Image 1 (cartoon, rainbow, N blue to C red):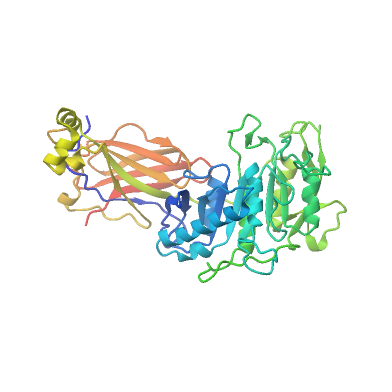
Image 2 (cartoon, rainbow, N blue to C red; image 1 turned 90 degrees about the vertical axis):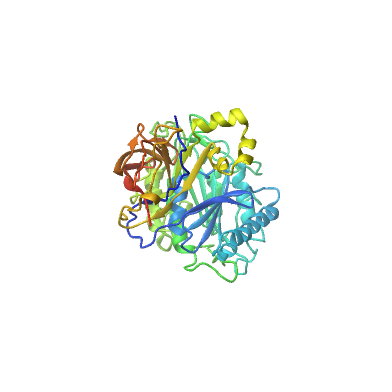
Length: 487
């Protein structure tokens, strides 16, 4: 039986050691203009907006896209784009950024930030043509507006006009055997016919900063096993990180929209390769693959084969390994997992459920205001996220009482719910201090960890120690502490 013998009066904090940060990140998630949105840290200026028009990132988010957002403090937005109405799509982006600048206090810069556009399948064409809208990209690359940082296309490169400006970095993720994006399949509806590979290399020869990579084991939006299998974005993450390091303005714009420089004929690096089939090589099997892969700085490129562009030496080396072996090389360690939210949840006591059934909830609420709280199916108490040493445990019993024994339930029972910045697959919990007991092992679902507690009775203090919190993306495990803070 669950008890709500007293109103929930908890003030809890989650302590997460974040190396190298003097101030705790203050993440935010919600909806802007009706679209899902996420900001890694409200304590820092927002420097760019990543616009998703395809496979959903939010609300749980993809760990690689989330890592890019955290590194550069980009706001993430799920905004639909229409390949038949690029100016309307551009207006939708601009309007949403303007609303975000008003809705998120202290971040007027959002209305001016540059944008990254991502699209899947036909959404790739929508992202590309939206990037070419004069409302985001002036046809003269030296004149404003030039607000598009980069375009990432999953499984499709299209004919004109469904292409970003020649001045804008463009990543195309191709899949072996996919009729919409395979290297040797033809660009859809283009006359005369030309393969995606030849089309991409011709565009790079025009000076477009265009990168093409063939990702083995995928099939148009998933793996070879079906549409809904997960596509990894680890190469896209590397590419974006290198582009943003070089192209993102050092300071967030405050008075006018950001002006992106013209990257047509950007120096960078170049990559050359052949395309072979029926090689019976894993992980491609007999599907098409890149072979004889070579990279070089543009300034010293001497290969006679046509090429694609790469933003930096590091990205070029990762591209060479991925293109040659079909496996991403080991990258720098993942950022530490961060707990982005925590709260305590108490459920309605059986006694009040019986009262509600007997007399009616509305009648009871009119009878006494106290029933308004007691009759809620659940009650949540939000937490703060802080960093640093663990705070001293409280010493004021009246302010730190966690649900004494009462006539309407055997003891105080609570659920502590902690959400993280990425999916969590494992972790342990233990009572560090206070009167409480665990009710079973923690429960994990996506980026949420739930710790059920019993016997939380007359506790002046409560401390729940979390250990070996292990993210699904292979990042390092962390420890954390959920604790009461009493004045």
